[in-house]
Length: 451
Image 1: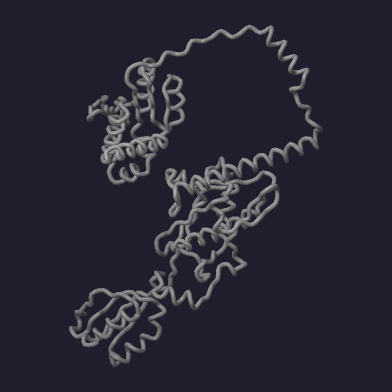
Image 2 (image 1 turned 180 degrees about the vertical axis):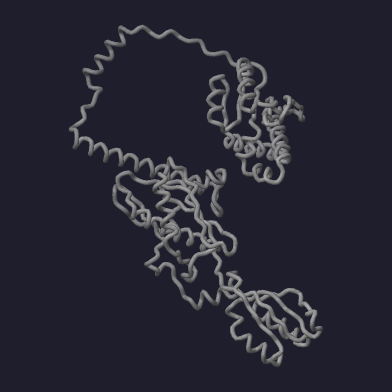
């Protein structure tokens, strides 16, 4: 199993989520993992303090039908969190927090300089001082400072203001520690010596478990982390493309070997239950096959379909692509028109480089009385469907007409639409796959311009 640890806003605590496809890990196992994540306070790896302000997402996982039990995922969950924290700490991705105060200090104006110097000495911050309306000789100073440095300051205020100052504080949650190095040195915490919270993973091979050090887990993991699916196949931070490909090859080889061992184990169980399997393919079977071949007429040759002539056509379901691409979806949250324009510019560049005829289709079926509109944007045809007509309906009809004589591709992640356009003889491309293709084309264009 793989957990994705991400920083969360201050004061949000530990947030849990699951983004693992149910076809790779059953939902009952996913719920069990989330239960184990929530049932305890996870200690950090800096001084052993509780973990907070983090979002933990179940990204990938796999269960063995024979060897996996409920307790296995408990151990795997605790160790995965710990291993992720060790990886983050190794890359300076961990931060030590401490409690802070919001303070209010009212004191005579002639003591304001001393108070501001004290706040800076205590590693705090303050806003611009305010003069109280009821007394021009009294000012109010507000700000934030660590709890550790504010201890006993009320006595100092009473002393240097001769009892005229008022000091009040309220808890303000946790923020970055002001003296991290001193705290780490004083704590002397060694995560490797904390045997109650191990970071090493337990892998299974041939039905037996073995330990893998926490820093070796990414290279030896049997299951992909799922980051390729979430981040568009980008390598993890601090990892080169070559290392990522090498790790992927090792994972595939390990998974293949594990599959062979499982097949042998299942075959042995089957033979113990039902007896030895009698293999076909002996001498008698070969003779029977040869005699059958002599009396079989050769199949008539089927002429190959003619190669489509003319330009290639590319039909794109606009809103399907916008809400499938992360960049366009974020842009659409602010302005849908800006997202449409951005997609139109992208398709113009792509079509100019690939020398195809692009047709971008947008739904307008909810617009009352709307008629179909087709506008030309540079080398791109933009179609707004009429009332009661969806983009899928238009693409299906256009594909039926174009695919007879031209090579036609349809970009959409709608499963039903993909099946229909394939029946018309067109090629279908998912929105995610088309995004990768567009990125590759833009990279080639940049390289060409740099030359």
